[in-house]
Image (cartoon, rainbow, N blue to C red; front, side, top):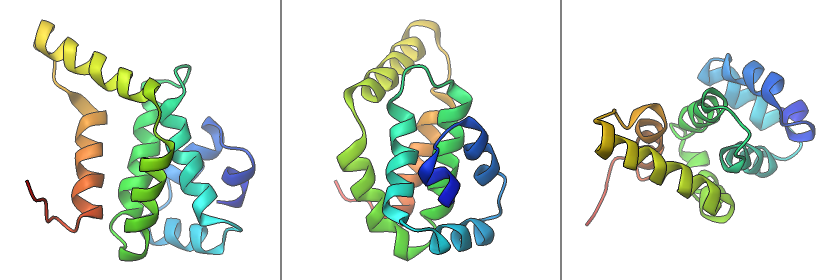
Amino acid sequence: ATLFINSPNEETLNTIHQLSEENLVKEVENSDNSNKFLQNLVSLLNEDENRLQMKVRALDVLAKLATYTEYEEPIKIAMEEHIQEGFENFLKQKEENHKKYGMDLGAIHSRILLILMRIRQYKLTA
């Protein structure tokens, strides 16, 4: 995780993505700065040049961490503070394609929903 904090790229993301939930949590706990780790994951979502697979992997890692109570609030804060307009536009484009071509919303939307459900402890209110 410390390597990802210092150098958030596809190679280091692939390495942490392959960890089990338990080992991922250990890595983050042993890192120098877990908040920076979460910020880097969220920042990967904003970058247009990152492939869909890379965004999905970043969301997978966030979803794994969101199962742990101690990461619910830090993930929420990281997403609130660091998701930018580029990612929102990406999501809107996916939604437009869904309407226009009947395509599934897919991996990104399902993982965002999973993260939202987990950080809200499966309690959503209207």
